[in-house]
Length: 116
Image 1 (cartoon, helix red, strand yellow):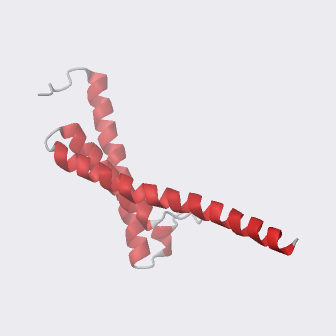
Image 2 (tube, one colour):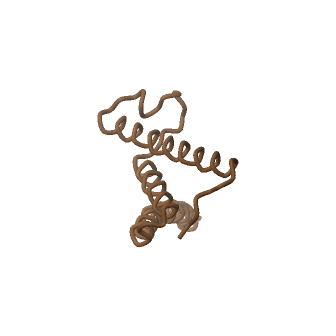
């Protein structure tokens, strides 16, 4: 059983961590809403080159939910399932990018070898 924090700074840090985690969920949800209904302002609020990918938004939401469940220590099994789900979403995307790069390199090398 976890004791409630009795230090003022610890309580403020806990409060701010909840605020920041909530803001991550809100930003990810707004991005998903922008993708779903094709609202450019929500997908790209600052008109930058980089737009949040919907899969990344889902990963952020799941990771914040997992973090909150770990912090509450109420249902550890659900928190582990959510964190493994984030891992299962992220690893193939990273691996695909890595494989695409090496695949393009192999194609370029293969074409050079055939021509020469």
